[in-house]
Structure formats: structure tokens, C-alpha cells
Length: 320
Image (cartoon, rainbow, N blue to C red; front, side, top):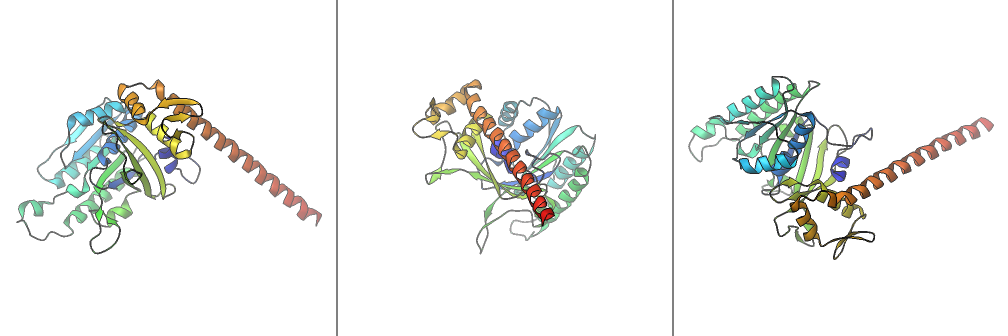
């Protein structure tokens, strides 16, 4: 996933999503936060042949979760945590991720905004409970930090909502300020606009635009795009096509094309994805691989030129 991998590049030039970190994924309602996290979790767990722990406080569709994970080639176990109190749910998630070591490679908290403290559960409606959720989350994230110090640490996703800040500009997220400092990465997501409106296709597929707000292990303020196939989650082929469009390598006019090669209308390309025709999308991956190879060659040429420039300056200094 070209733009996604590039968005998490570090100072050494390594690309790809960092594993074994604590990540907050936040955005407005119904923008695909859970879908992204489920898809990424499936990719991580499938690659490492280990398991996923899910603390769901909102309620979810088990069939949809299974479909998204299968689309990511994951068919392993998901430990679903249910307890009477949310504090117990978070403690259980920490306990599962802590031991046995290495069994669970991903932990998911869905979502921060749904945390309801015991005092809120047992108190009267309208009773003030300010700061209690933030305190719970601060304790949870500090416990997670201990887990993330181990060399075989799991990746911990915290899903959160974003809403307009009361009395000011910008967005805010539930859970207090401490989580912003303790999370290694914070990623803001939203649905992609196209020609003044959300871009959604007849079958319900859509495109997510992400922004890396914080990355302790690399750069921040980098964008990425993911194409979500309705009912199935992240689709790598459609994502490759859209990355190609963003880079100007794929033409999006009346039909999708690469040079003289035509692929049909965009809705037809989405239908190919629904049909499971993976070979259809290979040209989009190929054009991105060629782009990456060209970038590497340009970097090598630039390094050579810089080295030659240093040598020339050294010789001039010696002559003087």
C-alpha cells in the first residue's frame, strides 16, 4: 500500500507501518475507523501467525469483523473481551497482551469515547463525572507502555472519535490530553472528498484519507489513501489504483487508464474488485513498483553527485 507505507517513513528511509507501538486512530463518526483497524490487524496477525484481542465497548457486527479479517488473509482466533464494567474490560485487555508473551500480536480498544466509568454507570443521569474517563485512559495507556517496552511487543490500536471543539476552532477527542503524549502515533482519518462531496460508489465502497498527526518513530503530517471495498474492508488493488491516480501515474478521466491501456469506468473497476479478480489490478502494482525503482535510482544519482561535489571542494581547498 504505497502511500500508506510512505506516510510512516522514518529518518533512516525505512518505509512501512511500525509494529509493536501504541496508536490512536481518530476521526468523525462513520468514516471507517474500525474498518481500517480491523483490516490492519488482520494483515499484522496473518503475517506473524498470531492472534488478536478485541475490547469492544460500542458493540460490533461479528460477521463483518470475520469478513474484513478474511479479506486480510487472517483466519486465526480473536479473543473478544466482555465484562460488566469497562474498567474490568481494559484490565483484561492489558492482562491478555501481557501474557503469555507473544501469543497476541494485536490489541484493539474500540472505542475511547465509549468508556463509561463505574461512577457514571451507577450514578444518576446529569451527575457530574468530568475527568474520570481521562483518568481511566491515562492509567490504561501507562500500563500499555510497560508492555510496549518488550522486544516482542504487540501493536495496540485505540480507536477514538473526533468532534468540533466547543467554543473554538478545530477538532477534539475524548479521553483527555495524557493519551496524546503517551500514544507513539496518532492518525487522523476521514472520508475523501471529490468535487465537493464525499466520494462513494454505487455498492457503498469509499476512499479514506489519512493524516499522520504524530509519529515518534518517523515524520508527521504525511497523507495516505486507502480504498475500502464495501462489506470487505481495505482492498489493496483499488488502493494501488488510487495511489497511482494521486501520483499522476494512472489517468482518471472517463475511464481509468495507464497510457494506452484501458480498464473501464471507475465503477466497473470496483465491480472487478467485488468479483475477486486480483490479476486485474496487477498493472497498478507494477506502475507503483516502477515508480519506486525510479525514485531509488534518482536517490543514488543524487548521492553520487553530492559525493563528487565534496571531493571537488576538497581538491580546491588543497590547491589553495
